[in-house]
Amino acid sequence: MKIWKTAAAAVLVLVLLAGLAGCSLLGPKGTYKSTGALGETLTFGEDNKVTGELFGITLDGEYEIKDDTITFKYSTSFGLGTTLTKSFSQKGDSIWIDGTEFVKQ
Image (cartoon, rainbow, N blue to C red; front, side, top):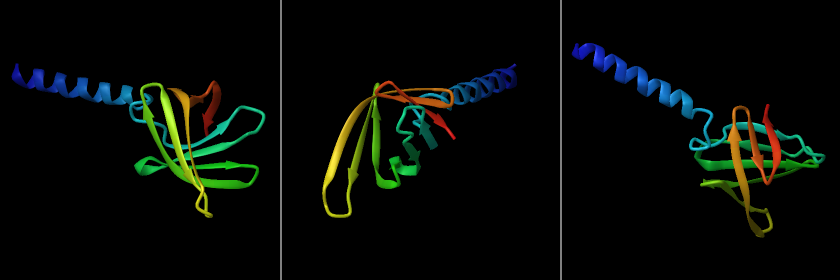
């Protein structure tokens, strides 16, 4: 009987982890392209690194997701930096930043 309880608990943990795979608690990973008119691309990597590309210009930075917001911190090669906080949600292969959908590539 104890083996069955242990097996059931292990299956439950795996199901919960699989459910979290699409959840914003884990954050986006990979490349996402905007469905908006500008067609910007965001690539989310390990250690909260992000690369944004728009009109051939690429910026590397970091991101942090807290509750339903995402904060981007970018710095340029000539020393200027910027921090942007936007609304954020995630479902399946899409994320939404300030209402604009980005689809995983």
